[in-house]
Length: 133
Length: 348
Image (cartoon, rainbow over all chains, first blue to last red; front, side, top):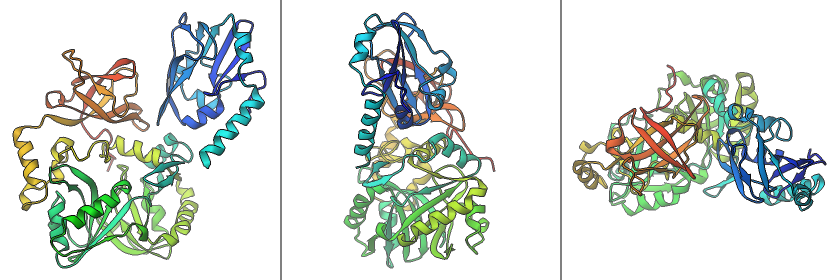
C-alpha cells in the first residue's frame, strides 16, 4: 500500500527523492479521510518552501486541508493536470496525482527524519484505532 | 463516523458525490434516527402548537404535514420542525436531534393549555428514502398507494410488515418518503430496503450527502441559516410565518423588526472565481471597510449542478440577483454572484 521508496510525514504527505528533486503528494490514507476531492490550490513554480510550512490546500466536498512541505527548497514544477481533475488524487494519490516537485538541496538529510513505508503504515493503523475507539 | 448530537453517524458510505448523484437520479436510503420526535395530545393540543410555532397549524387536515418554526419570545428560532396532524387532538412533530431536549422544555414552559407533551424520540426510528425511484422501492413493501399520498401528506400503514407512519416529505429536494417506526425493526427495514432497492440503483447515504442535497435545494439547516437571532423574514421564511393567524410567541417582535425594515437577508450565491466558500467565511465590505458586511451560512460544491454554491447573510442592499459579492476565502478573496433560490428544483 505505502511504497517503501517514499518517506512520510505525520500530516500524511509523502515525498520521493531523486537527487535533489523531491516529489510531494498526499497519502492514500489522507485522500480517503478527505473523501471526494474537488479543488487543489498549489504554489507557482519558483515559490520558496520551508520545511513544515503550509504551501497549498486540498479541498474535498466536506473539508479543507492544508498541505505541509516536508522539505525546504524551490518549487520546480506543479502538477497542472490537477486543476481540472482534482479527483485524480482520490484515484491515484501515490502516482499520477503528485502535487509538486521541489528542488531541495538538503532533501537527503530531511527525509531521514521522516517515516518509511512500514512505520507510516503502523502510524496510520494507530490513527484508525484512535478514531474508532 | 462522526458524532452528531450524541449519535455516531456515518458521514459517507460510498462517497458524498456518488451518494448525492444517486439521490438526484435514482434513490438513496438515509438513517435519520437521530431526528427527534415530540407528540402533543389533548383537546388543546392545537392551541399549544399555535402559540409556540409561526405557521398556521389550524389549516392542517388530518394526514397533512407542515414545515414550521418553533419561536422564541424575541421572534427567533428555537428550532425548525415538521408538524403532522394525526387527529384533532394529536400532533406528531419531527424536530432536530440536537434541539430535541430544548424543544421539549420550550413546549413545557409555554404549556398553559394543559396539553400532554411527550419527548417521543426513543420510540421512533426514522428512515428517509429519497429520489425519483424512492416510491418504487418502498412500494414493493406496502399495500399503501404511495403515489396517492400527496406531497407533505402522510398515512399510517405497514411497510415490510412493520407499522409505520409514511410521510411524503424529505430534506433533499427530491420526491420520496420518510418512515417513522419503532426502533426494534430498524435493522430489518434498513436491510430489506437496501436489498430490494439495489436493482433500482438505491444506495445508502450519510450525513455528508444529506447536507449537500439540502444545500443544493436551498433548505435551511438549524445553526447555520437559522438560530435564535434570526427572524423568519430574514431567512426567506415569510411563507411559514402567518402573522394573521392570531397572536403567537415572538409575533410582536417579528412584526416590529419587519416594520422597522430588515437589515440583512439570506441569499444564494454561485462562485464566479474558482474557490469554495465555506461556513462562516466573511462577506467583505464592497466600500472597502475593515468589517465584514455578512457571512456565509453554508457553502460548498453542488455535485449535481457542478458549481460551487452557498448561502449567506448580506445587507438588504446586496440581495438583488447578479450582485457581486467578495468573499474572504482564508488568506485571499474570491468573487461570487447572488443567484435566485433554490439552486436546484427537481423536474416535475
